[in-house]
Image (tube, rainbow, N blue to C red; front, side, top):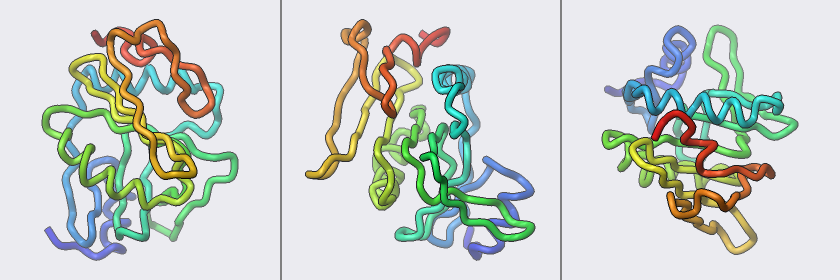
Length: 176
């Protein structure tokens, strides 16, 4: 369904996390499974001491998109796009996490990954498979993006997620 940016922001203010805006198109968000919700809770618990932990609408002006990542960490000085009676959106997330289900895998690994690469301040993009212990961690460096695959066999090897050492089992606690 075609929609204006302003109409989307009003709708997002009234019904957050239900719709995304992709280049003039209204896109329905998939409902979260129990595993998905538990993984989000595990991330919140891991980063609970970090006051900039949120689930929020992210605005990506270069691709004309507003998206709801499953989890976001903000820098110490977040930049917000705000207007009265409209949803606020973050412009500079430091870490974005998407939890892939069979229904969202293609969107998360292709379309949204293309969107997120256009966020100048984004440091890391983490894809979490909700069905099995498998992570794809993209970290920005001077040459571009480095991909690290973290799987079940790496369960005792910590990896760095937004300057914090994390174990795979921390993310999948009470899930698998």
